[in-house]
Image (cartoon, rainbow, N blue to C red; front, side, top):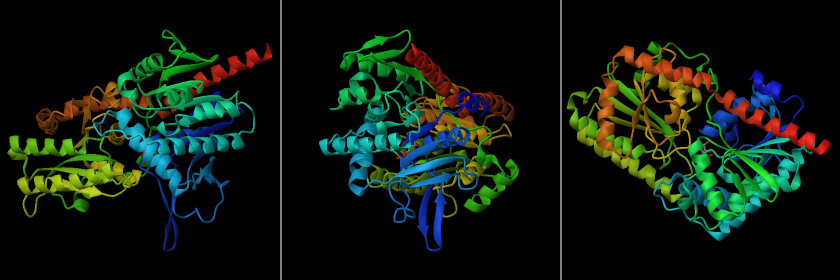
Length: 490
Ligand code: F6P
């Protein structure tokens, strides 16, 4: 935190993301505050608290919309204001085209190689660009000097960096792509691949979670754009403008805010079992995600089925508690996944359960971070079985929640987090039998081994926390900025 503050004396930081960090929803007696289930928000929020500045995001709540105009600016966090949230209000048509259509039916399945066929519609693409222009206007309106540091977040804003560059040629623009970047052949099916690449290359620095994704991006540029690529320095020069391509593995704050006031693990174990109506001696595996087809929720359930079939001694003594927050439900692929998950959980419960025992407990609702951490502390195992994931912060949060050094993390080898958390039990989520055997290994792992693995992972997350993620980007940005200033003097 200190490093971030020291790196930015007098520099204005403007962050742009689709998702806002605080959502105000209308209730009978006024408004309620919700913190969205979003890895991006989890990571960026503590950084913005440390940096100050402005966070520009799409206003998504139901409470403020009628009372604010497009210049809506509020100080946040509500309990301890330290930065400004500026909301851009989008029409339904804009949301359909830019967020649901282009971002989530096009770029999301494209980049996750998720076997959900990406859909590219000209009308969505055109609205996507218009919305990006609106955010570029908002950034320009917020800029107090010609050279702020602008943090552009994610696949909703692929064309924004070049648009900001046009309005603020001297800005230092850091774009972070929170999802994977696929290989060039996969990305090449996107009809607007060149426009997207050119848009991103408006950035001073373009960040991905892993070097692998950086290399995929460089390959894609090489294949589709006429530019100068310096592989040693991992940079691309397009029309005299150089962009650095860098890996910055995202993380969480340490200790996480959600740990404040948590009861001892023993109490959490008891409370969680009482609340869920699960026997005190039953072992719990917990899964927490947005209900998204990239997270491998169905695959995890199939693995539970295989596990109980092969190891029936666990019937009645093991439950998968699957917390799933509804997300993007306007899209058919997401609604279908929810239906399929409910159906599959029912079938498995019928097969292995009885009146008093259900091996899969599916809880479909949003949980606030404090509740999630209590569940992590009450569980024996956490399962992250993403089919493909940029990083996955749930894995890191579970580790951060276990200050008792106990608990086993089962982690997909296709999540970026598996590169750092190699002491987890790694799985191929497509291999249901293999995953079933890992459940057995997790449930029979001696305490001493749990401790050794957990301590290694905790040291990793503590050391490479989100302040390190932000500080590395900001140090690189401020070096570039100083270099630019020297060039301007000459
Ligand atoms: O992985 C990209 C990401 O932006 C994550 O940060 C976050 O978990 C998710 O997508 C948010 O999705 P949405 O904002 O559409 O709910």
